[in-house]
Length: 292
Image (cartoon, rainbow, N blue to C red; front, side, top):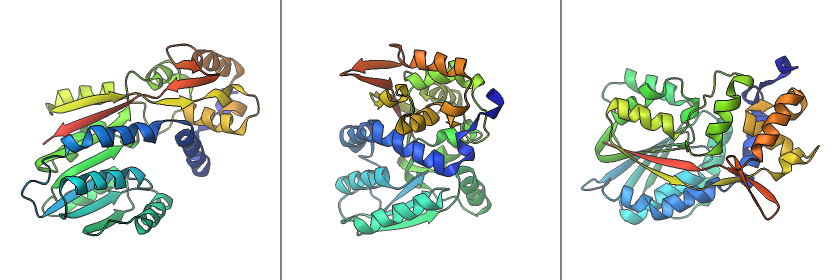
């Protein structure tokens, strides 16, 4: 029965495991790496002009892999300059991993790290109560905007924290990705949850237009290998189903007609391409750069 379907976010450990499977079966991080290598140096070229310290704010920094790539690009652009990197991340487990990664990574001298175990909105409330808002040279929000209740107000607030020449980088699923089609069509039939909302680059850029904030947007190709989703009883496939539908144990709890319908759609050209025996779901990403 449909009523037995529940949101993936009600089971934290299963969510974390399904997210890990998503990362290992997608080109998500390679796509981000490509952006950091090819586009980021130009974007950050002036953020540190005539500054003795560059202040970076990471919202939803996770385990830090992408954060450290960003820091290395800033170091290359502004050799020897001091960097303050503050991380807002609600998961204690992720913060622990981030700290372990910092310990293992060389060439992080001249960098001060600070971690805050809180959500973006908790951070917002805390700093608004403090006198004198800290300004930042680079703020990034990587694949986290879905977990914010009032996205437009959040964009406006963080934009207000930008120093001279500063930028905000938002990474979000592209409106051209299959995620957009999947959730537009099936969102109403999947478990509702208060923690996450379906949003793509289309909605974000519309909000920025409404706010009158200047931005540039870049789309990069990315795929997710969902071949295992079509193999009965495959554990990996089951976790990927959970991630795709944001539903805990989707395979076991979804009404058969719903599952059959989604399964058919996932193999259609507007969702996935078939290549070398694999089914590759369109996971395209948008990189939106807001200007001060």
